[in-house]
Length: 234
Image 1 (cartoon, rainbow, N blue to C red):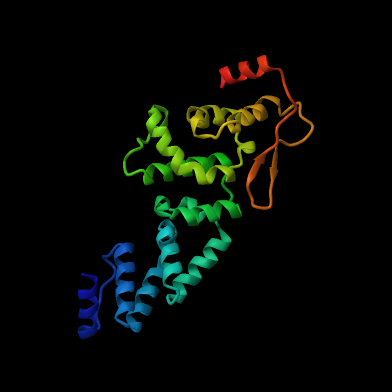
Image 2: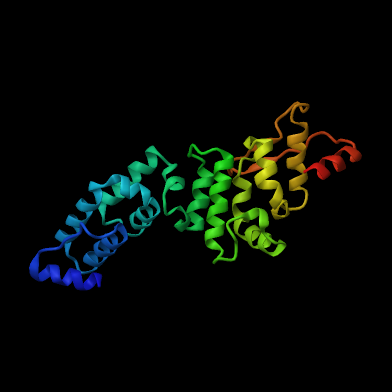
C-alpha cells in the first residue's frame, strides 16, 4: 500500500499525510526512499517534524528509524539532539516496550537519565511483560513460579545495572521482594544486609565499577540467628 501511494505521487505529485498516523507516514518515508523519491522524502520529514510532541511520544520508533536510515538527516538530528537533552524520553515514550534489549542495556549502562532506580525497575518490569508473548500477566504479585522464571530470563541482563541501594525499603518490600527468586545465590541476602544494617556500617555497601555495574560489598559478619530473622521478615 505504501509503495502504491508513492507511485501515485510520481504521477500526480500530490499526497495527503494529514490523515495518517505516525507509523504510516514513517512507512511512506521508507518506501519513498527506496524509490529514490528525494523530494517526497523531504516533504514527509518536514511534515513529521511539525509535531515534535508526537515524535517524542513515539521516540522508540524515531530512534529505530534514526539508527537504520541515517540518510533522513532531519529526523536523525531531531533524535540526537532530543536524546542528548533528555535521555529520559526513552522511558517516557508511549512505545517504550518496543525498544530492543541491546539498546535498553546500553542506556542503563550509561545511566544518563533522571529516573529513580525504582522507576527504572518499574519500566523494566513493563518491558519484560511486553516481551513475554503474553506469558506474563500484568499483576506480578500473582505470578506462578514458572512465570517468575520467565521474568528472570528476561530481566537477568539488567540486574547488575540497577541501583538497588537507592530503592527505599518500602518499595523493595512491595515490588522486589515478591520476585526474590530471580536473584543469584547470595545476591538477595546481601541486599537484605544493606537494608538491615546500613545505619551501622562504616563504608558503602555498593561500589560503582568502571563497567557501570553495581557491586555489593558485604558488611561485617553478623550472627546467624539475626540473619535468619531478617530472611523471615523479607
